[in-house]
Amino acid sequence: MTTPQSAAALSDTRLARLQSYAEQDPNNLQLLAELADAALDASQFSLARDAIDRALTLQPNDPFFRFRLSSVALAESKLDEALQITEALLAEGFDDPAIRFNHAYALVLLNKYEEATPVLEWLFAEQAPFPNVVRLLIRSLHYQGQLDKAIDVAKAHLAAHPDDNQVVGMLSLLYFDNNDLPQAAQWSKKALESGYETIDALLAASGTALGAEEPERARQLSERAIAKQPHNGRAWVNLGLVDMLNGNLPGAEESLAKAVHYMPGHIGSWIALGWAQLMQSKLDAAQRSFQTALELDDTFAESHSGLAAVAAMRGDMAAAEVSAKTARRLDSSAISSYYPELVKLYQQSKPEEAQRLMQGALKRSVAPNGGNMMDMIKRLAATKSRTKP
Image (cartoon, rainbow, N blue to C red):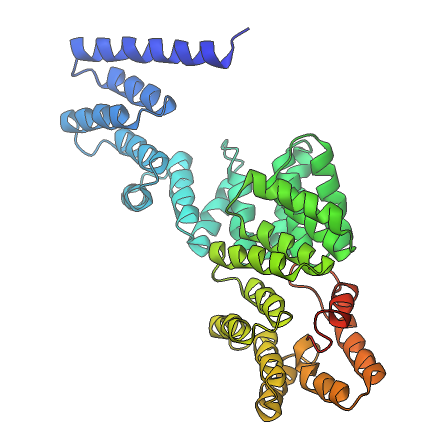
């Protein structure tokens, strides 16, 4: 049986042998191709580049060696170089599926999902023999918000490859983001029970646990996700919401601050952070968080309603009403748009009416990471801040 160590030793031996042959026969293009491929497989990128450069000196613009160079550039995360090479090859009429794959891969890594999608769709339809095609296509569609289409792709793939646990995990997160929590729970359970944990399955499972108000399970799953990917913002969001659920507002703020550090463009994380800060009466910090969310998208109701909450806490009911009115116009179910009325009712010693108002708002709302927020928020509202949004 070949062990990883023995396989690596064999690879090194073959690579050394190919280097020796290439020194003896430096103009042998076939030998240089074998050397470049072996060096790339061994992650010796400098050696691979040297072999390719030598070949291109002998045979300038050779498409096969230029393609190899794009693979080396991808491996080195030199994405612009890889894309420049594949664009030129395709423009010159070299339409090999491997070139298309490298082209799409570079586009995805450069976050150019709209450009990558049609290339990946063609590769998927043609059943191109690259295992990452379906995963890149699903991820590309997911980032564009085309959840139904991504779900269809994942299900079609799993019909033929039911044991592809990575795609099973991806499907669970797609369902979660599509607000289908029962399906998210079902598919994440299938993925996790396979014994091969994926980050997508852990995120979907922790999110559904939050929606079901199972804080300890959600914490465990979030911590496993963070152990797997310490810079995953969504995992930190889930952990922060667990702490909010448990009333640990400083812990929630710490985790949510990490979430926005890793996902600075994610509006829901900024709003969750703003809530954690607001419930600790950190009004300046909460205002900055809600304002950042507003700057990311001024049509998102919760950004305006968060600012309404801050203004109401400061006693500036006129400003609170202006922001709340905007929030209600954009989305009548926005939680914090009810905040000024809530403050007034508490100030008028009408806690029962305030509670009914808050419960009505929360029943119509969804947490930033999925699930109904009513039970999550009502305990916090009754303790740290009676007038929380």
